[in-house]
Length: 215
Ligand code: AMP
Image (cartoon, rainbow, N blue to C red; front, side):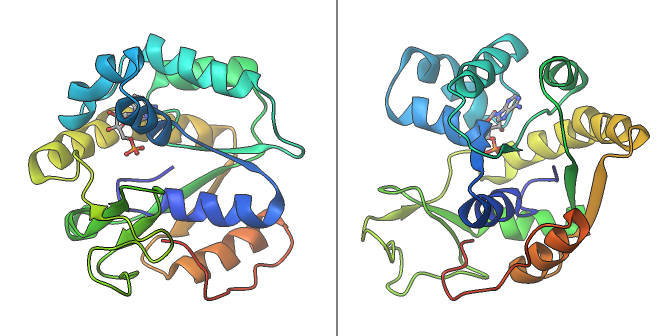
């Protein structure tokens, strides 16, 4: 968990890549639906572009359907969920959580991180013009497709997303804290350092940084 731009996707990808876990990003699932022009995509497109939260029933059904595939050997990392009390209840009723990873980033840092974020329009790889620039400007290093900004990475939508994070998601973190699940990490550190600390806290196999670090 963590505010927009705190590196949730990057840390989840590193954990999953090395430890054979499945990465479940609710935002990525919805973006896939929008890109593929599915019925769900049509339902969520405007809500997402405005930076608002998608309706809980729809979120629950998409998460449920994804988890029912049960395609993991050791477990999964959920990214961008739960984002409010109702989603947390739904999740805790059905699944055991080993830990909650909280990436802490001050609001002042959020805007310039998020506004310099780019996504490959071909393979979906994340870039950030501050930390992970493509070798050729505006082109993906892996597949060569153009890089684009997410539709909701604009100042107005970001304001709505930040407001929801503080009003609806932070209370969920407080609930998790009471259950002593939470590992709190400083998101101002480098992606590699955060992953190293995270593995130490969770007593997972040590992380060895490589030049292929995403994000
Ligand atoms: P993210 O990639 O996590 O920033 O999510 C992008 C957008 O997808 C959010 O701004 C919401 O519109 C929608 N979304 C993702 N996860 C959720 C969730 N758990 N509940 C409601 N809406 C969500």
